[in-house]
Amino acid sequence: MPAAPATARKTSPGLPPGPRGRFLLGSLVELSRDWLGFYKRCAEEYGDVVHVRLAHVSVYLLVHPRDIETVLVTQAGNFTKSADYRALARVLGNGLLTSEGEFWKRQRGLIQPAFHRQNILAYAQVMTEAAGRMLDSWKNEGERNIHDDLMCVTLQIVAQCLYGAEVSGSAERVGQAMEVVMQRFVINASLALLFFLDMPVFLARREQRAIRDLDKIIGGIIRKRRSSNQPREDLLDMLLRARDTDGHPMSDTQLRDEVMTLFLAGHETTAIALSWACYLIAQNPHVEAALVEELREVLGDRVPIPDDLPRLRYTEMVLKEAMRLYPAVWGIGRKAISDCELGGYRIPAGSNLFILQWRTQRDARFFPDPERFDPERWRDDPVRSGKIPRFAYFPFGGGPRVCVGASFAMMEATLLLAMIQQGFHLELVLDHPVEMFATVTLRPKYGIRVIAKRRRSAA
Ligand code: HEM
Image (tube, rainbow, N blue to C red):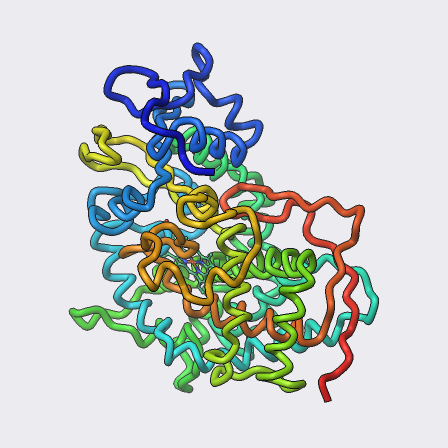
């Protein structure tokens, strides 16, 4: 649905238009009832820059790619991350996702090379082996929640890629402790996201214990690795060897924060992207047929390798389209450091800004028939060919803070989707509800239940 014309009602002079809201609470009640629905209505009714009042806090919703590019790229230096990231910092410490300023810049410089395309190709085998183990455990005609399976397999993959085989048994322990902490974090970050405020984070004893557990396991891995002289081919080794421009390595605390960050940022997002892709494929038999055709042609019955990736074009198109409709990170929050102009409005310093992949990527101005799942949109990539603005589609964010793991995630998702669809036809369990749950990520609320039917081999 295109955004409304500029005649929309204004709340007060000079401010962008937006809902009037209730006397004291503003739009807090409407937002808390249904985040996605509320933001969708705002964009449809009021246009590209929407002013939303949540009690005494003002939030500006940005829908147009031009303004999104201003915030993420051209004036990125004028914006810090929003309050929900600070709630996350309580768990992750000062890692890449949560740090700011010069400190962040130094860390980004140290970590980014480990994620360059040629460095991550070595992880393809870890990914396909983990996927193979997962698929071996699936019974023909068995009913399963594939979102749970995918959370498990992406956690194993990130553990293995981060610190290698010898301690990968700890992936489960880290995963369990992280789940406890994340439940608390989701509540805190959601509150922070809802109120756009710095919220104090209270941790119950169980949660404090989980953080101590995480510190113990990850600290142990780092100490063990520091005392070993054997070079390894994993991300931790690259982080240990990394030096900044003054020749300084990372401290143990810094390494711990970065390992935690990569653990967290690096598994749920990819699992979510794959879950929604499988859900959409299961509802679109013509897409499934084209996908299976490509997999038969390129792979036959064998396991994919990195050299296959350029030929798995349709598989990648399916993923891109799934991430358009269901972006795992559905919104990005920022705070303005000084006054700025967005969409013709003056936005005062200290304002909270909310950029919504989920809304912009479903905007009919950029994607005709936007609710339709149509991987063909990506055959002649409209962003790359300049037919639509660069920030009409940005599942990995953009600018200096663009996802550092984007290539890793795309390789992992492509390999895993190829193997799942090569081996199984997934049929949705009809009476199982599938709903979006927008917290920090866009999870399927009750998971995605399917009957997994083994495909006949291509031979
Ligand atoms: C489909 C999967 C993924 C999606 C959709 C995704 C999305 C995003 C987005 C939108 C951001 C930008 C947040 C912002 O600007 O505030 C981000 C940042 C980040 N992502 Fe990802 N991500 C994915 C996978 C991964 C993986 C696999 C890793 C690592 C193994 C990772 C690590 C990070 C880190 C460390 C940052 C912070 C970068 C910085 O601020 O310098 N992500 N991600």
